[in-house]
Length: 187
Image 1 (cartoon, helix red, strand yellow):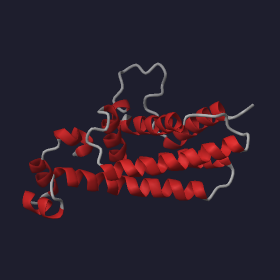
Image 2 (cartoon, rainbow, N blue to C red):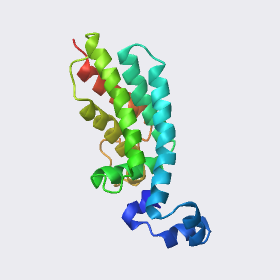
Image 3 (cartoon, rainbow, N blue to C red):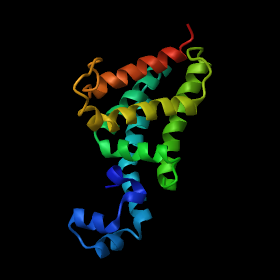
Image 4 (cartoon, one colour):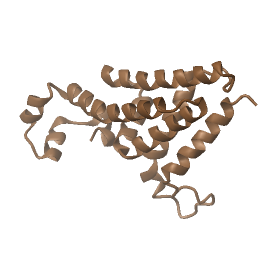
């Protein structure tokens, strides 16, 4: 429901009805809607961040680290498209409802990206870059690709580019990798 309606549009009566429980049960486990939202986002985001960090730390080459960072984030996010929708809503609203624990997880992934970019710069492989911009390029592109799949699956009758039905996360994340990495490489 948070993915479909956003934080403000999600009503606890609707959550209770969809979960087939009474509202008191939800409030017993989650103090209020804000706590429920925080728990939902943390439950969705923690495994993604942990998986990305573990995969990146297993590599030593900065180019491979960045490639693995992007691909792992994309594949992990694609497994839960509701996360992509929620994150896109949060990004569009300026993060006004984004709980602090979820922000902390986003900072963990940004910190890991920063380490990779710094390593690449130190080794003379990457140009200096703003890690936040690279982070937004990854997060924004991948999540928009995932969140827009339902929209793209109902295209107009004429799809001159024949691309709207493309839902292949591997191909999309590979394109993101190629674009970002090639822009960072010192030639």
